[in-house]
Image (tube, rainbow, N blue to C red; front, top):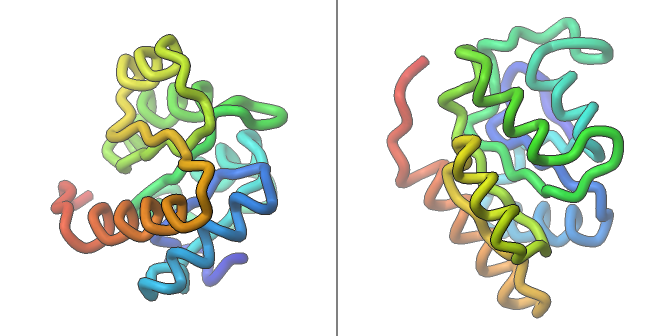
Length: 149
């Protein structure tokens, strides 16, 4: 799902089609999914964020307002995506929320060391998962006040 690439507010980086669909559905319920792009692996996410490959026509400065990032991804894992985002001044201030099934302390610690804004273990229950995504979307897109870039 993608709208005009320059208008993306949420970048969802998720390789599991079921989790991606549940996330998109929960965001749609709150009217937060109309400007969402879904990247299915870490390499596609980096290409999108840094306007490379299939996304060479967009501007890096027109980045999303929020990245929802899974850790366990094909091609490039979530920690590497986070590392590259936070190392680049053009993408450093974009809020990143890790949404993963991993509850391993080393993943939590490493994510925060790399600059993640929030770390959420995906609830297994559908209702709790949907509610968590709705709350995240509302907070990061409507309540949070990020720096203007």
